[in-house]
Image (cartoon, rainbow, N blue to C red; front, top):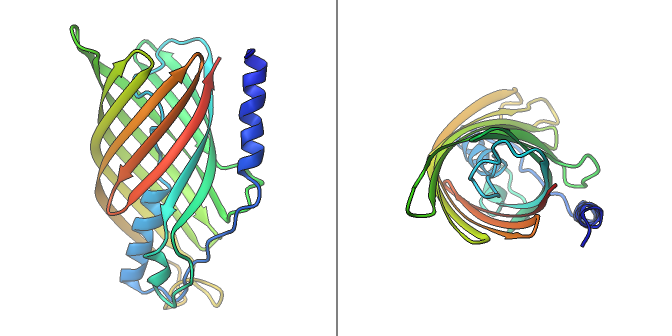
Amino acid sequence: MKPMNRLGLIFFLVCVSVAGKAATSLPRNLDQSDRVRALQILGFGSASKILDNPYPLGGYSGIEIGVSSEFIPVEDLSSLGNKTTDKGEFNYYTLTLGKGLYYNIDTHLYFTPFNQTEEIQSYGGQVRWGFYEAGFFPLSLSAVLSAGGANFSNLINVTTLGADIVATVAMDNVAIYFGVGQARATGKFIGGPNGITDTQETLTEEAAEGHTVFGLNVDVAKMFLALEIDRYNDSIYSGKIGFRF
């Protein structure tokens, strides 16, 4: 498949991915414990994902583009405040761009498409530094720093910060990675008569949790497929298809 055809395939997947998805309803009348739990679910659920071979792009002269599909569990969210009928998982999509900066450093940016029907806007990025590579075994270690933000229905605004150490074992075109770290989320909950808080005041909450991640990346020529599980208090599942050119 020619490079332009691959790019066309990816953008076709983008167009398909942003169509016809139902929005998740947010519960109202949230007290302090409800707001913290909502922040844990939505804040960490929308945080930056690796979804790639964690070994940095380095001085690679091209760029990487991809489409990711992410799932946030909302069953616990539906039991908060005045409750909703939503069950299962909230699915949304992001576009990603990656670029190597130096020999062992790269950066990745992500954002949700503006025409996506779910009432979420998400954006952020991460910087990766590959600081160790074993000489006699296909093992590498990377440090990943990330930051992001998300807006849910103009009622909850969250920002997240994360830091992880990730170990990667690469075998031919397959890379398996596992990481541990820490994440922090801050959420602004909008008040007022149409707001989401029990006091009708705009309030801010914070939460911090340990983070573990396990993922698989498969390269097929210049295309790749990544699958990942992020574990906070909840488990977040995501996948990504992308292309390097």
